[in-house]
Length: 487
Image (cartoon, rainbow, N blue to C red):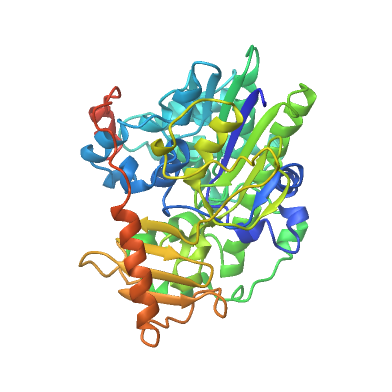
């Protein structure tokens, strides 16, 4: 039985990035976990936004059951009350393990941890961290003189650290430090937290570098700088034109406006994935140096994927297409080896971890099943479909089988709340065997298939158990949530 547990989430990491022709260079450390353990090649998230996906990972429940069907400012008090009745993995392990979390996400995400740290707030005597925090915490608009001094100091500091940013990227670096921890700070915080821990531990880390703005301070290695893409020469301004004036167009110009072409932005994404993998490798090296690697159960996944212009969605995870929902999953533990092609989803993680730690639970507590193999090494995965839904940018629900993907819009709103235009039709059906990129909607020629899948999808959602609402020992910090814009 493993002694320790390491659960690693890479934000917005597409499955195809760990299976690309140069994945040995792009994600070598992630690939090592796939090789030392077992890779699940058909793992799908249950949603397309971080708050919902992380909650499914940590509770073993489908979004409508745990309550976080939305994200950020769209999360309601009712959502918070519902999730408060669930028991996250960290809380389940607290009686037997020191529980440690490294992530910028707060509130219900930090339940059950003995120590839960935002890397941007964790410093061991860093003068730059102190300066950054002091400047950014000043109320109201900062005087231009202070901004200039801060930017120049930051640029000098980065150059001394071997990093470089252009003048145009300085403001983005400051925004990045405020919201998205770098992989370097995430790994350093994780290693710091492990120091002095006695006995079994559970560590959950979250790497953000493949999330827009894709950590613009990372200098891509040569093999990424030389990467080409089918639409790589398209000017970014030209690609943004169909959504010009929308909230997302403004965000793109702020986040990646320093890029010239679509290819430039995709190289930023790949550099972010590479950098997150590199720093994750340092964490793995630390475990090996401490003699803890072999005795640590490692679960590695992504909360969701990323659309890199597919379906007219620019550098975000709008939509329920495979680019945004097909995610990596690897488990390194006794009995896990090779590759599994059966359908799995994020809600299978918690029961798997509990089984491997020989921790009691009732199967009906979860919407997933344990992936731990039987004594003879076999595993029964009879799932013939996976299910997912979105609510943050547009309200949709989807079912995916080996052959088809059916997506249905729910509600009256047709346009994406961010982009101001629709992404897809009211109903979409794709033949995945002949159209894996989901580009040709065949709903008009195959209405019988769509009807069958819609019925199956609705039956699944209707059949989910109710959440036991009587267990509410977490009081949502409403004042704090208001300040953060949660409602």
